[in-house]
Image 1 (cartoon, rainbow, N blue to C red):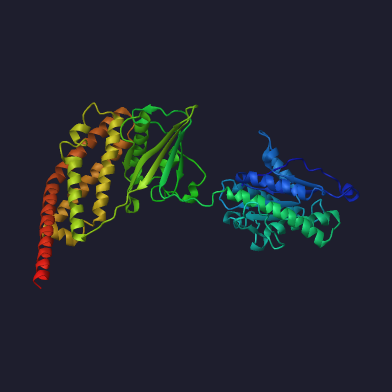
Image 2: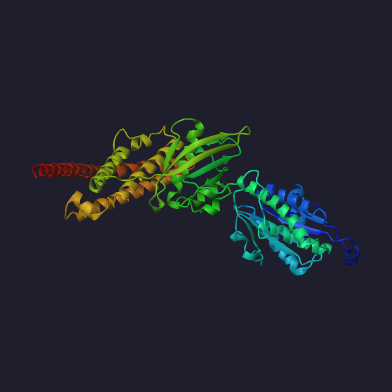
Length: 519
């Protein structure tokens, strides 16, 4: 939570002056998150109104001026605080850490000086609104907040125009009653239980209405069915030979990126990462392709040409994702935001399992053929290796090719095309050596191709890039040359199997109909 501090300086008095003067000042320090500033301002005003007859001083952060030593002011205020009122609400906030500091400092101050100038033992009062005390606030700096010390206000619905009834067991009433007892103890007076209860109940009802109205405007819950990246730059991004320059950009991650980046949802709430931090969180085996995909996607959309989406290789835990730009915002200052959705690709199978598997096998074979083997493909070695292809264009093509290839491989995994029974169906019995040799060749050339592609995607200088480009073209030529024969044979065998299977099913269906008719 955000640090809170002094509105006015505490008046320092000697022991003798305190004994002979009017009732001592009661110093209340409100510790809260900056996100709850509006609510705390209302609580501040109501406390002042409720105890206007008492020498009450309430301190929070509104008087800290820019350039002042806020830590020193906070420490001074906490040293002379009688009541530390800690406000929690139901949402996690980045400023919780400041309140942790305040609780810890106040606890140490109590150990040094147990009784304050108000004449009672200095205390802290945690006040929870719609939530339990966050786990992060337990046992901070040796302070343990027990359940019996927490006032929990539930988010009950109050009808418009209806004054809420607050009895003595209500947490809001208990809060005001506890402060009232300390005030009366300091003043050395009392107005009777009935008078006190009536006065506190009225103010508690008003405070409860304030809290209720505040909670109605708060977000109760947030869910993110998909993921979203927001890339922000202070100026309009520059374009280099490799595409858009994001080195000085910041990135906000919305949703669960646990399957893509090495980050949990709780680590991403309410904060931004530098572009380099995000890159470092991408698994090493996916980093080059994912980074290049994001850069080329941003480059394409900012230049205003081409498609506004891009498929990126992300297959940890057997998942694939598609990225697309949903919005680009450019401010007058030229600050730029690029909103990118990251959507998991999901498919479902229907119908006969065997025909579905054969159909997927055909799709895998034909898509690989159209991707790297046919002359019309934009990923043919002779096209990517041509001198007029720039570094940015080649990286975009390589990233797109790898993305499409990974989607095909993902489909093969989903269909379980490596199932031994299915391989026997395709290639026949006693063909183990032939199948194993094909698998070995496939894996060897695929790994070489991916390694050469990652080198291109991470290349920077001209000479280095030219050499890596040549190595990639050679790896792509080798890959196509090695898989062309096995791809053609695999696809033709699957087509034959599917045709025979469908004809067999039709024949069986026809015979069943005849049997029913004759029966």
